Length: 317
Image 1 (cartoon, helix red, strand yellow):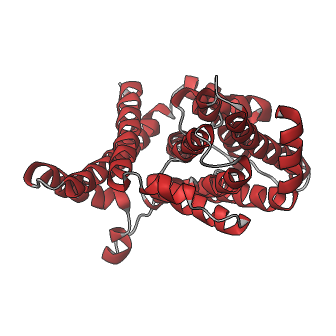
Image 2 (image 1 turned 90 degrees about the horizontal axis):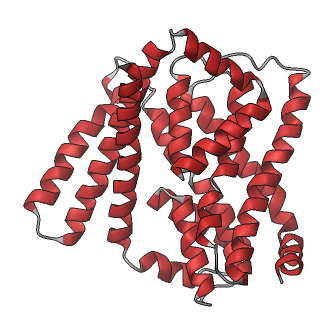
């Protein structure tokens, strides 16, 4: 029954993300595409733009797919897109931080007020009234976003509660022990994200696993690296049968995440010799690692951006 509870929670979580994304897209209309078309040639502005847009619509995949579509329509070139992609990877961390706030526990009212799971029933209730009672499209889409947020928080709560009981079983312990092998952990992260096609959802699942106290830094780091690689699958699917500009955007995103993961894995193995990473990690710890990965990868790639673009032009033509 606990497995069914987890599956039910996961269903609410995934559906909630989809509902939020739909509401945000409807609310913004063509504004996002127009902003993408008017993005500055400045790398820093492009990164800031990508971060903001992704934080707004809660989906780096949606931003990447939009870039591919605009590149195919010859409205946007690869050089403009690459900076936005880097920003999109930073923006996708926002969802993880929102979920992390649900782990806040305190008897103080003001602190408890910042716990999204405490507010989600009220937000969802207001969202339903917006949809039922309002005839204005904008208000209905706002209600859709609110309901989606409530579903996401309800899904996280259900997954966390079910995982607390599942954690006591021998099969779960055997499964989690597999993550002590970093290469298996990376593969797990890749497959999980590729299957559900959402790094935000996959990070949310990992944060739920953390609530059981069974996930350590030793396992979490390679899983997160795998999740960042797995999120490229959406771009790969979107650029199948597309032209060269779309392929360049897809290649850049893969290069960004794979190279960042490779560098982090090297650092991970070095740190293992000096620090004990077997201590348990919290949902907030997951958010910190996820954010540090994307920020550090942007800082690593940014000085090499022009050379990478030239390499991409040579390889893809």
